[in-house]
Image (tube, rainbow, N blue to C red; front, side, top):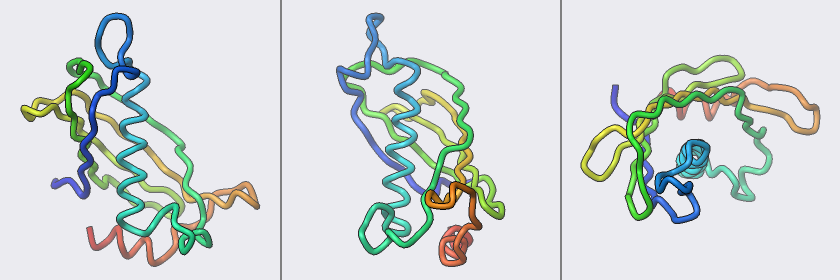
Length: 134
């Protein structure tokens, strides 16, 4: 399966713990940054024109850590579309270092969400079509 989106980022000093490697919780931020960049590229997420769309909430996240990264490293987050349901979609991720070595593998489930009604809503048909084209 090929990645549907990739996003590169620097491991920042603030990401690192006293042991000198990126703290485990920071990997969730790396995934979030990649997701938001993907949605912005795919359907304009966050733009004023996209304000009429439902929001997206994170329902589940899991990370398997393979090897540490340190301040100054560059990582690439690769996103794979694993499943699309009625109201939710699942991503799988691979985070790799500059040499292509796997740093972490992850999986997340996102739900389209109507904040005003406080409930999940179906994935809009145009977004579903964008996913299908991937």
